[in-house]
Image (cartoon, rainbow, N blue to C red; front, top):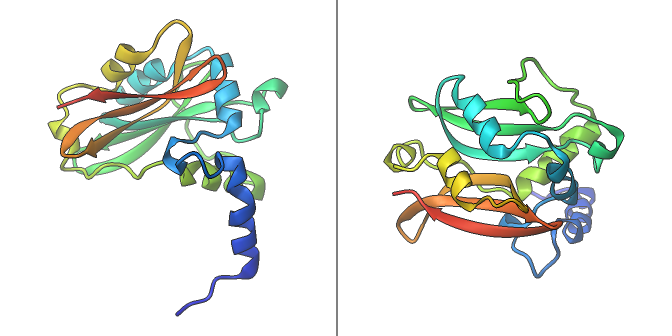
Length: 186
């Protein structure tokens, strides 16, 4: 049996309250930096997904990203990370949350930003099986459009299969609070 370093266990245990505490499942949490900053982003998740799909592929997963805690207050760039299924391969496209332009190149990968990304991904599901995605008749942008309202903005959406039913879980921010919506896709 392989032992994990004590420092890692302490770090993970210390991070749990930051991720929504015991009352919230990790998959239903969203980092506070994203909840606040997505409301200020000029580009919507739906628009970013449509931009990413123009790069080739069908979107199965999309998340708002802000690498720094409340970085939008200090005018730090934010983006949408969109996972596309192209053939039988997944690829990720980043779309700028201000300009709606696909981003090329690598991002600043300081240790703090890598930790931030790691913590963000702890609360997210893995992309679906590549064989499941083509069965979705409804597109990700259409699912987002069905649930977004003037006072509720999508922060994340992902294709999932629950109890044999294919659909999208869309996380919305409404008045600073997170709410979930399910849209059947099959």
